[in-house]
Amino acid sequence: MFWNSEIECLPREELRKLQYSSIKSLISKLYSSNAFYKHKMDSVNVKPDDIRSLSDISKLPFMTKQEFRDNYPTKMFSVPNTDIVRYHVSSGTTGKPTLVGYTRNDLDYWTDALARSLTSIGVGEDDTLQVSYGYGLFTGGLGLHYGAERVGASVLPASTGSTERQLELMQDLEVTVIACTPSYFIHMMDVAKEIGIDFLRDTKLRKAVLGAEPWSEGIRKRIEESSGIRAYDIYGTSELAGPMFTECEERNGIHICGDMAYMETIDPDSGESLESGERGELVITMLKKEAFPLVRYRIRDLSAVYDDVCACGRSSPRIARISGRSDDMLIVRGINVFPSQIEYALMQVPQVGNQYMILLTRDGALDNMVVQVEINPESFSDKVEDMISLRSHIESELKKYLNLAVHVELKAPGELPRFDGKASRVKDKRSL
Image 1 (spheres, helix red, strand yellow):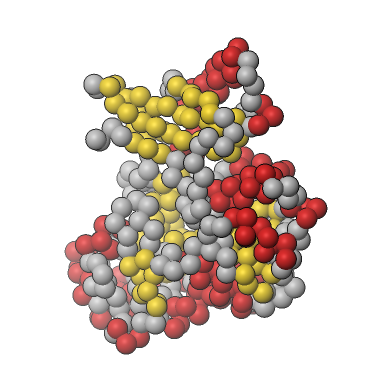
Image 2 (cartoon, one colour):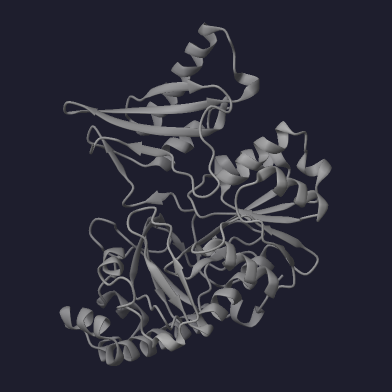
């Protein structure tokens, strides 16, 4: 299913011409009207006329989140305040939140991107979509809300929390699709099980649009096996606009609307551009944003860009599942460790539940990492020897994937914290 087949299936060469034309126009406009961008381009001695091909975008300097913070709240905006119709503020997961402004056109492009995305996974006017992302300053709730309304779906703006009430409404209103963080959906599955609700038997829920935090294929498999629904990955950040892009039914990467965004990957250390399919740090240029332009913004998310045409027929580039962030890498005893690696290793052990925490402390000069792991109810035993054996097995799996000895603490079902919004699974106390 397509929302706009003409642009979604545009031949790749025509898409590149369109992207080049958009970048050229964007750069010329910003250089002549925005002091921030003019200064950045002058600092590397690049003028708009130097951009003569799509690949010349690599001549332009990167943007960083620190620049957003340094220019807080509105110094980087490119339109008068009278043109701003909405503000959102990032969650501040990695530091001080950033403020983003939107013109009416910005909101329209954002909504259109989500209309294409929801249509690509078969969401339409026959669906009722429960939005369990937070509403308000966070972009998730309102983004999905307007995208779902545009494709004609009925929207239940549930936001976060009151999980039993959400499950009741899901049944009463025959909700078919839910959008939330994967950690909140896992929490919802736990609550549903406690009160005797089976998603397939007792609800009409068949699809989930999950994102706003990294999650693995292992978690997807567990969600689908436990709930019987089909789960799709969604991507976006507040700086882009909010959640914008999803997988299609093929689930072979997240489709990026090529007429709205130009994606690159770079080596996080050297900044050198990478080829299609090579995993690195995502860099994005938003081609149509008016209030808060982005040119070569280093998102810090780690992924790969694929240029081949998808089996669904869409020619738009796709990005691989986000595996972590280049700036949330943990260095433990000199070894680079990503939380996503830990989740991947844990998901290889069937007895491990869906909740875990990573605790880091320092004893003198020595780093200590403890992974607290919740055990599945059916695997939890009161026999000490069983638990010791399981703990040793999990520690062995972690060492195999991390090349690092890690101490594991087993936790009873329900003992670790649940999350309504983005999961926060790392507690690093080494700087205290």
